[in-house]
Image (tube, rainbow, N blue to C red; front, side):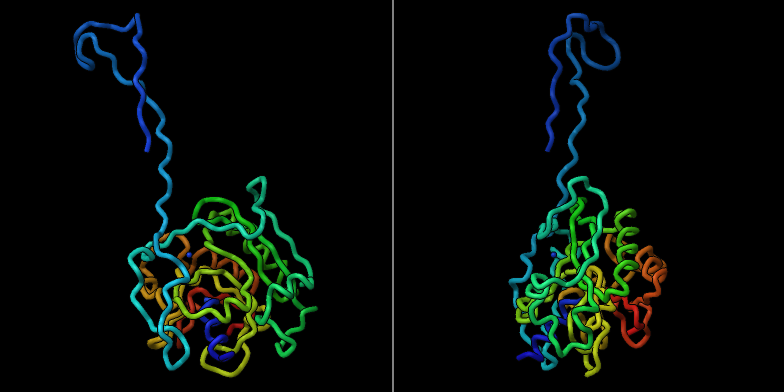
Length: 288
């Protein structure tokens, strides 16, 4: 059961206007000529409000997939409602009152440790004292500023904050950034998650050695839009449409993009450049 939960964690780290007519104007012309007919008044020009953004209608986290022999969910076609994925961000932490970028770096407190649940244990290869709890402001697909949270290796925290500062300034959108928890580990696979996250104490997919995520030395960014693919495995399992890397919609990461350049600036590499597999969501300080 715990092996299945660890596999779930692997998949995790990878969601009208109306015009108005002017009142009669005593000085209005009633002469003939081009434009309005004699004795009529043209409607006053108005500024139409911007239409509300169209959000995806797929219900996230409820459509459970059958498990494969590997413990993942079965690979399914990307639902039509997720082929251009856009959701508003639910605020779990207070958003910035001024809409500007803010960040904090601090220790993993007892309260944060409790929230992390089984994503960390004393058996993990990194001690709590060597981790940092980081908050950063990010831009959602709703266009608003939100506060996200990560647990990272303390040695990397300030550099990672500088990356997200640059992404916020450039308007790069992120759907969700929250701490993975035991509930995520135990959840059945639905293949539609999109949480940008860092630490989860697990092995490399398909191996027994620790993942860089287990050290807090890796971050998966918008995993649904930037899936993992090796052979016939795609994670998240409903994200196959996004293996088409000619897509250019917001949030998708390409070679040479600002996201790649910013992580490279702090010495982190990108899984989208690997040859044996593609992990388009994955940025790591260790190269693995």
